[in-house]
Image (tube, rainbow, N blue to C red):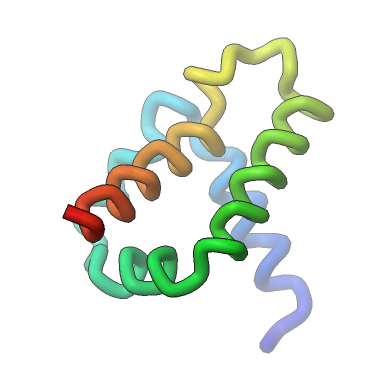
Length: 85
């Protein structure tokens, strides 16, 4: 595990313009993400809280609907809802 990799990944995700943040996700294989989120609800809840706190601290002037972190969470929420149906 390279120490800087996680930071770079987070930076890349956060620097994607909000309109395009979820565009590449549908072409990815979703089953592994769905399985991980379903098996780790506490981790996912912590992630949601972190997105909210980060937005509140650094991007509050931006509408929640336009913030890339919330767009990604919305997409992931749809994944987990589909797995429960």
